[in-house]
Image (cartoon, rainbow, N blue to C red; front, side):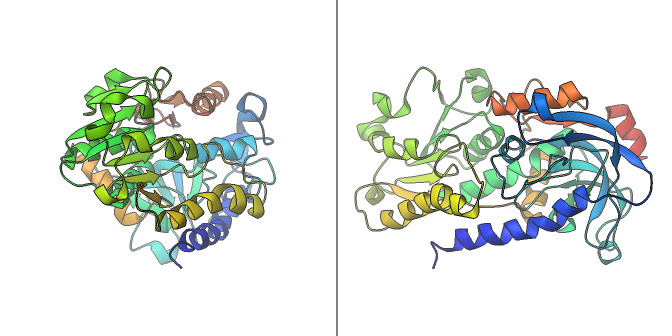
Amino acid sequence: KQAALPLVWFLTQIYSSHSLIMAANAPTPDSSTMKAASASALGPPDQVLTVVNDMPRPEPDDKSLIIKVQACSLSPGDYRGLLGDKKIIHKTAPYIPGGDVCGTVTYVPEAYQKAFQVGDSVVATWDMFGIGGLAEYAPVNPKLTVKLPQGLTPEQGAALVNTACHARDVIKMAKIQQGDRVLVLGGSGGVGTLLVQLLRSSKVSYIAATSTDAALMKTLGVDQTIDYTQQNFWEMTKFQNDNKFDCIIDLAVGVEAWNSCEPVLKGCREGGRFVAVVGQQWHIHADTFGQVLTTTLLPPLKRQLFNLFRWTTPYYKLYLGGATPEAMTEMLQEAADGKLKVTLDVKSPHSFTTQGVRDAFNHHIARKGHGKIVIQLVEENESDKTQE
């Protein structure tokens, strides 16, 4: 039953996403329009993404807040949907990409007026697939929206809202203990730059991370940076025999990392565990539900189930978490209090222009981002006026 829970979660979240998808794409009867990034079709950013000025504004309903968006951060799901790798969700175009946003509330349904007011600065995320965020105005799910703490910029809020929740929950799933030796695969990504900081605050004894940016990793508390373009972590003798890791957290590779990890990861009898955030492969194709089940979900679930009956291999744990208001509030406050550094990619924030949005997506597709990739929809001085 436990092995089936992630599958049930996946299917229910897909269906719950549809209301927001419809709200983001629904035409409005009046003539008011807005600036938005429009994907005219599914395909490469340079061919299908354009920032237009005549997109209909979202229409108020009784389910969604409407916010004036100030910043939007990108997640892997954003470009996977754009490229057509998730046709079970994005079957038609045009649509507005982007789901992790920060902005100012302009409309509140009656049912949520105790929690939110017009003028509130908020951050919002998505339950399964984000859509509608790269626009002047966006509908957001009130159940996945929280207020932005003072001390954080809109760009920082958008960068943290979803990513920080995953970093927190991965740490919990890994059951990190004081004194552990931990290897993070993908240390300089959006989740990785937060996760290594949480590991350090958990008082682990040693952190290694794969990255091509050793300077960034050092500032975040990493003891050893492994340039994955030059070295294979499983071949490094300094991590073998008596110096094996207690835990490996895979944010970047997939099944290849699991198949290769035993020389440097303790067995289950010694408490060794492998936490897979990337279950099978980094690139996910979801043209049909059958394809999702057979190529993306079932292989790692079988791996986890089979691993329960092994005595020598490390424990294998598949992560399938999601953001919650509680986690969002907690992690945003951690950053506002100065306990967590928000790392934006050096090219961020990108401008809200056709070229700026295309550059942001292309940078993400190339997996070149070190930190979170963010698009700024409102300039700082204009943002201040909006909040006033």
